[in-house]
Image (spheres, rainbow over the protein chains, first blue to last red):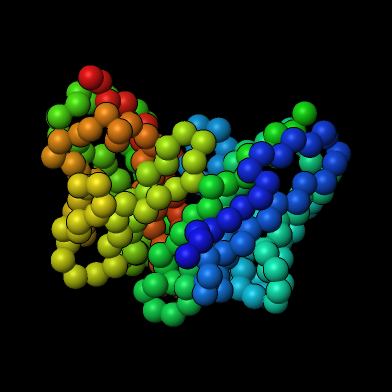
Length: 116
Length: 113
């Protein structure tokens, strides 16, 4: 059973370009979470999605950031017009639905975004 | 506001010595609590979790943690540290209303030979 998969692992973008980060949850998991980790800091929650629904986006910046989790395919975190401050590691986590298990999140290896 | 605090940014211990990493939380109700380990350039691996019941929980790699409601703490312990335990450790909490987790800023563990 493959774990949470994220690609690309490393992404370099120039200021003003778009960044697309992909996350495939573990098989059977229907909840996806995105977190951002700035250098020397912990993970900060960005968005929580279920298939075709955004459940909680309280941690998402108001502009330039969007996320989706379509019925088919991976979850996508999209950052438009990137700036240097977007340079960070972006982690995706997934969980199974139902009961306490929905709080046990499995993390992917992360995508390290560098904006030049 | 919900928060998780890890008071120690960096801890150094000798190999074979005991270890305790501190974690305090501030939540409206007792949250679910987790400890993760992150090696450089890697994702997070779950060490252990507390949902309810026995306040002393056992995890992988010989780690354990004790939940103390009166102190709002969930400290991680290991009786004898190995060099391979050098990594960054994160404490996290979730509440019953949403699956998102709040993370502490992490404690970096260095193990001296």
